[in-house]
Amino acid sequence: MTLAEKILAAHSGKDKVSPGEFLSVRVDLILANDVTAPLAIREFRRIGVQKVFDPQRVVMVPDHFVPNKDIPSAEQAKLMREFAQEQGLVYFEVGRMGIEHVLLPEQGLVVPGDVVIGADSHTCTYGALAAFATGMGSTDIASAMATGEIWMKVPPTMKFVYQGRPGRWISGKDLILYTIGDIGVDGALYSAMEFSGEAIDSLSLDSRFSMANMAIEAGAKAGIFRVDKKTLAYVRSRAKRPYKVYEPAEDAQYAKVIEYDASNIEPQVAFPHLPSNTRPISEVGEVRIDQVVIGSCTNGRLEDLETAAEVLKWRRVHPEVRLIIIPGSQKVYLEAMRRGLIETFVLAGAAVSTPTCGPCLGGHMGVLAAGECCLATTNRNFVGRMGSPDSEVYLAGPAIAAASAILGRIGSPEEVAA
Image (cartoon, rainbow, N blue to C red; front, side, top):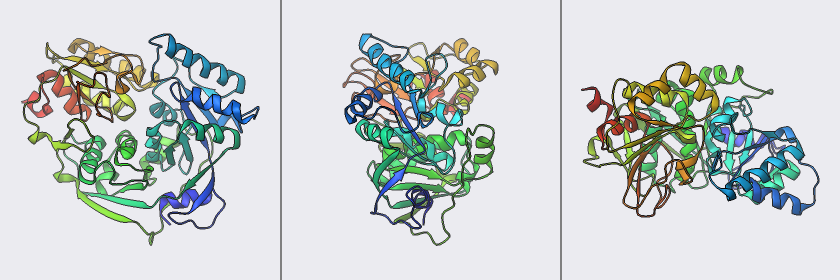
C-alpha cells in the first residue's frame, strides 16, 4: 500500500485497502473556523446528540474574518465561541490564535499518522507531517463531531518525484506552482499526491507545508510527505500525544509517477485566474501591481517572513504599492519581532497585521477595488477572490513578492540585489 492507504487502513480496522473502496474511518482531529463552524454547529444540533465524541479532538479557530470586521462576522465568531465553551473544545481566541493551518501543527495538535478533517479545503496542509488530512463540508464535520468517524472513498495515489537541488530563491511554493502548472487544476482529481525525491528532502518543514497546502489546487484529496529527520525534529518538541510513523511499501502501487528536475525550475508566478496559469519569472514580462500580500496558510510562516525580510532589508516599498504582511500565528509574529523582521517590514513601508486570513478570501485587510492588481503569496487567484471581480490576483512565493513590492511590478529578488 501507499502511505495514504496505510494510514486509512489503520484507521478503518482493515489489513489492506484499495483505491475506490468505501470505508468508515476513525478521525484523530476535527477542525472548523469562523466561516464554516456555525453551519456545522447548527447541523450538529439537528442530529440531537448532546456532546461531541471527544472535546479534545475538536478544534475551533476564528481566523477568517477576525478581528471581526462587521456585525455578521462578530455573530459568526460568537456562535462558535459559545459552542466551544459549552462543549469544552480546543479553542483559540483572538490574541492567542493564528491562521488555522499554521497554528495546529505549531501547537502539536497534528502528528504523523493522523487522519485529520477540517471544514476548510486547505486542511490538506497537514500532509507535510505525514498525516492524511483533507477538507470536508460543514455537514460532514457535524456528523464527525457526533461520531468520531467519516465515510469516504480511498483515493488513488499519484507520486511526484523531484530530483536535483532547488535554486537560490526556490521554495516549496515554486515547486507546487510548477507542478499545478504542469498537471492542471484537476490533474490530481480525488487523488493523494505523495511528494518525494532529493529536492523534497532538502526542503524545510515550512516549505513542505506550502506544498501540501496547495494540493487541493490540483484537485487532490490530500497531499502527503514521508517522515524524515526534519519531520521528527519538528514533531518531537511539539506533539501533544503519541503518534505512529507509516511508510509506503517498496512495491506500493501508484496510479501515476511523475518526475521533475527541480534544479531547472525557476521561481514561478501564477497569472489570473487559475493557480495552474503559471510562468517562470523570466517569462513574466511587465506586470504593474498595486498591492502585495505576504502571508496566509500557504506562506505565513517564519521562513517566509525571513525570506521577505532578506529581500526588503535596507530597501523601500515602491511608492505606488501597498505591502501587507500577515504573520501566520502569534508565535510567528513574536519570533519575527524578536529577530527584527517586523522592524525591517515597517521601515520598508509595509503594513503588518495580527494573524488573519483576511485578504486571501477577500474578507478584509486588503480587499481589492476594480482594476487593481495584486501579487500574493496566497493559494488562489480566482475571479473576485480578493475583492472586485474586475481586479486581478497573481500568485508567487515570498521572495518574488517582496522584490515586486520594491520594484512596483512583478520581478525577481535578483533584480533588487543587482
